Image 1 (cartoon, rainbow, N blue to C red):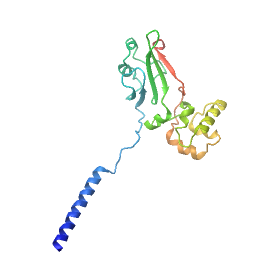
Image 2: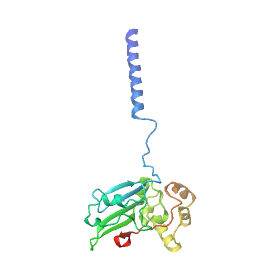
Image 3: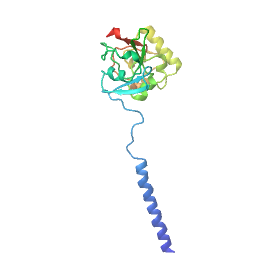
Image 4: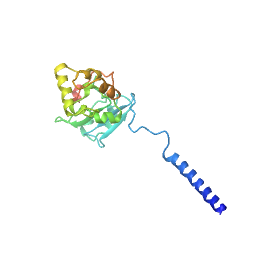
Length: 203
């Protein structure tokens, strides 16, 4: 009887060790982050119209037009120069749509991805690159507060940096602190939530 009990105990211990070993492999201590970590030397751009496979693409530097052109399926790109006009190089978080205009020349439309998508990619936000819909992607902001933010912008001008949002009624220090991780404090210039077009005549 004792021998049988000892055998059962041994089998149980072996089984327990096996479970622990497999568990360490299935649930490692070091996990990859759920959200991609954005690297400043990378440029993440969404390509939309005019490419065979729309989606998010990663480029190594700002001189990416040649790479973008190679992904298009448009005939009008053949005579398009492979350099961006001054000040028109795309930045991380922008969406590019490419199409042929009435003169059969390539037009490139640049706009900002929705804030929710930039946040998911780990791309820092900036108040001057936010639309009314974008504000609602931030925790604690609903339609009313988003409207209030845009009304304040129209009355008092741009915010400059995200901490200036504290001037909007309903936004206090706690919310500013909660949003800190989503914003970049060193972004200047650039268009906000509109679109800009680049065509061959601009080069």
